[in-house]
Image 1 (cartoon, one colour):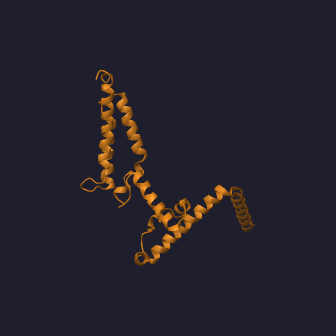
Image 2: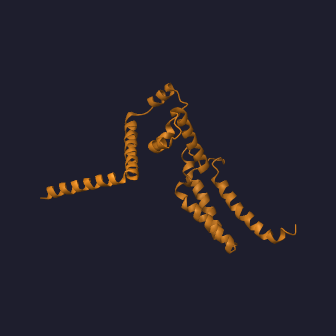
Image 3: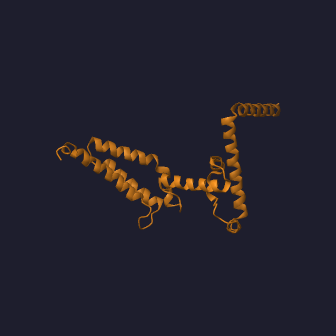
Length: 198
């Protein structure tokens, strides 16, 4: 007991600071009743952080920790509350990593390939729409519900994404060829512009 006495104030400080994080976690909990929207949760967290950083009772160390918590939350603010408006979107990185792992495991079962990184990179967000447990009849029924024009728009977006990925791949692994082709295209465009000007 005597050995712990010199650290009593430090332990109390850490408990107080830990409670701030517990309070913020409670505010961010999507399971709380009533269901929350991104705006209401954002406003509650914003008020809490303002109260935390403007509290006049903090000493210098508490104020530094409060400012650090505020800075970290503010730096992730743009995507912190999206999960409240998008059903099924994971709230934490752990949940998101688990979801991505399930996608990879499902594709490994289907394809038999150990490395599915290329599949994930190539199809990006569309990889989440693949359900390996779905039967052909279920897939066809789901496809019947898709509007043709919406399908064509998404297909165009996918093609643009694949084109961007191909450019990135060529730049990374065949940089000299990529840059030479880019320079040739630039020179051709300049020659064409000059010939029109004359």
